[in-house]
Image (cartoon, helix red, strand yellow):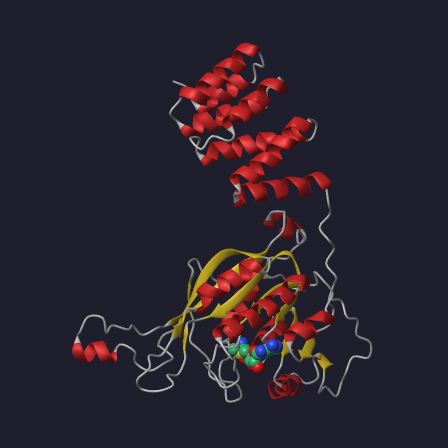
Length: 395
Ligand SMILES: C[S@@+](CC[C@H](N)C(=O)[O-])C[C@H]1O[C@@H](n2cnc3c(N)ncnc32)[C@H](O)[C@@H]1O
């Protein structure tokens, strides 16, 4: 009976016999951890030709569990540095398996090989209010200059300020914004998008209304514009914000008519694609001053009461912004809301020592943000009285 430890010990004896034993273990042992360790130990042997032959034979076999294939690919990557045969094998494996984990391993390995430094962030030093369509106004920000994005996009046909000719048009508009956001967000940092399903008004009593699960569709939009999924946090409210959906069922008790009252919204937490681990982002703040004694939210359910505002139909409660800022940014970071509305995120960011950057297309809302902030923002955009003189267009 072999154990992982025994295989590791065997790997230190680099003789042709021990190679043979490792092959035997790989082929006959039933424990996957032991088999994986055998693959790893084979990869550390000195005999490149035997290793190559082993990989050639095993790395394309669909009988092998993917966990073992990943270990074989790892060997290929490390050996490809000094041996062309392994580089070719690596490329063949990438094509053959067409698997996202293998692609990611390859990307990560290349990144480390190049010893590329993380692109230094272009520092934003003053709060900005960008008035106009965010796909245009974001062009005035340097690449990699934002450390966190938190936003609540306009609802699809749910409120008076949004009007899109179709759901496809809405999603493509969102893709335009998230793509523009991707350029300005620092590599490896977070974008958090607050959404909930919306329902469109029925054109007549004989038609059914359509309910759109926006977050499912935005997942695809986000992954196609350069982010990957990290978490879903549920914002749980004490009460539903729309009329009693369950009333029909309550009266009739007829199955199929059941529609629960919704008291949650999603916070979709995504990270900008990059070839390094999060530790690298965190290391930039090694001298971080820990002075946060608040209790920690330990689950993905955050219980927060909604907020209503006389000026805007759909505002964030400030507490929601505070939590996002606390968990996903450091003091001094530049933080962006590309759909700023009444500017709640900017207010919370300012109070927490972050530098807010807000985009808003509606001039009335933008003017409210500008006047309520008492001249705090450097304003860029068509209607601004206080314009920045020289604006560089970055993209
Ligand atoms: C759901 S609201 C945001 C509310 C905000 N979270 C708050 O606390 O007030 C979305 C906002 O995005 C704005 N908006 C819509 N399309 C935009 C675009 N292309 N560029 C900039 N802002 C846009 C709308 O005018 C609206 O005020």
